[in-house]
Image (cartoon, each protein chain N blue to C red):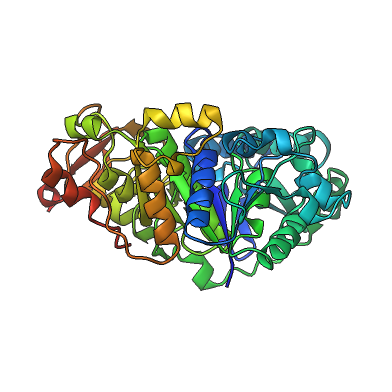
Length: 267
Length: 218
C-alpha cells in the first residue's frame, strides 16, 4: 500500500528540503521504491540538494501541462535506482499548478512507488495547499525556535482543517549543549506547545551544510549524526519502533538527556 | 446609551439594532462609543443592520456604514420597514429585508460555547456569550467572548472577555500566560520576567485588569 507524505513547516529555512532528500534516500536504502516531488514551483531546490540539477529535462509543470509523460520527467538518483526525483519548474510560479493537478499527480505516482514524498514550499498559501492536497499524511519540520514553533502550530491547525489526519513532528537542528544551558527550547518545550506525535529529533550538524552544498545527502555518511537521525525517522515512517537516540555528544551527560528524548507526546 | 444600540447574536450572525425613535446624530454617537468599546469583537465580522421604521438614506446611510467600516464591521444586510431605506441600501450594495423581529427567548439568552481542542496559532474563537475551552490556547491564537472565558488548560495567546463592553467579565485558566489580556475596553500584557504559575483569575478592579491567584479570590 503506497503512501503519499508531504513534508512541510510553515516557516522557511528550517530544513524541509534537506529532510525530504534525506528521508527519501533513507527509505530507498531500506529497499523501498521512492519518488520525491519538489512542489516549490519557481524556487526549486530539491534537485540541487540531491545533486541532480544537471539531469533535468522535464519538470512537474511539463507533466501537468502534458508536454511529457510522467516517466520522462522522473530523474533516477545517482546512488539508488529505485529513488526518483520529480523536479519543480523554475521558470513558472505556483499558479501553474492547481489542487486537482496535484491530486491527480499523487494518484499517478502512487501506482508506481511505495512512498511519494512531497517537499512543500514555505508559507500557508496556494503552494502549501497544493503540496498537501494529494497527501495521505503530513510530516511537519520545525527547529527549536519560538518563531518556527509558532508557524508549525499554525500549520498543524491548517492540516487538521484540511482533514489530513494528525501530522507528525520532526524537530530539526537541536543543539544539546544549548538546551542543557537553558538557552534553547528543549524537545519537551516544543511538544508542550504543539501536542502532536514526535517521529524524530535531528541534532544540529555542520557536516550537513557541506554535504548539501556538494549535492550529497547526510544519510549516506555513516559518521553523520544528523544522517543517523534521518535513517531512524525513515524506519519509524516504515512502522518500526526505533528508540530515540541520545543526542549528547560523546562523553556527555547521557542519562540526563535520555529522559527527555525517550518520551512521546500523549495528546 | 447602550439602549439605543442593541447587538444580538442569532443564527444568521450578528444583528445590530439601532433605535428608531431618536435623532440620527444620537445614534451615531452611541454607535461610535459602543464600537470603540468592543472593537476587537467586531473586527472583520459581518452584521445585519436593523434600523426599524427609520428612513435611512443618502448621506445618513453612508455615515452609518462609514462608521461601521472604520471599526472593521461589515454590513451584510439592512433590515427596515421603510421602503426608502431598503431601496437606498440596495443601491449601496447591501441586501435589504423588511423587519421581521422574531428573536426567541433562547437567542436572547447568552449561552456558553464549549470547545474541546487545542486552539492553535492563527485560529480565532468568537462567541457572543461565555466561552469554555478544554485544551490549550497557543500563542498566536485569539479567543474573543462577549462574556467570560474559562480555560481548563494553558493560555498563551490573546484572550478578550466582555468584548461587547461587559466589564464584569472574567478570564480564568489553569495557567494564564497570555500574550495579551483584554477585558471590555481595557488591555494588559503579561509582565516581563518570570510569570506566576498556577490557576489564575483576571478581572477588572477599579480601572485596570487585575490578575490574582484563584485561591486568593475565594
